[in-house]
Amino acid sequence: MGLKVLLAIFAIMGFALMFFGVFGKKKDIDNLYVGTSSSIFELIVDFVYVLSSTLLKRMIIFVLGLITVVFTMGVFLS
Image (tube, rainbow, N blue to C red; front, side, top):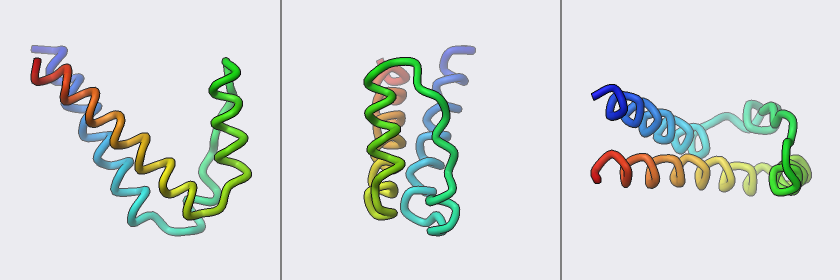
């Protein structure tokens, strides 16, 4: 039961991330904190995010939310 509640919270957070990617203000998206990287893959994604335009940042945020929802709901429904 607790796992399903946790997965539901992650799915809601994924939907919120997708909503922010589509309807977020340009200033908020440009000033979004990226964080530190612990692997080479994360470092490459951070550089792509920092050096990209606002439209590409919106797409990256939306895709991250979509991935979160898809994987969470896949585990939730199985």
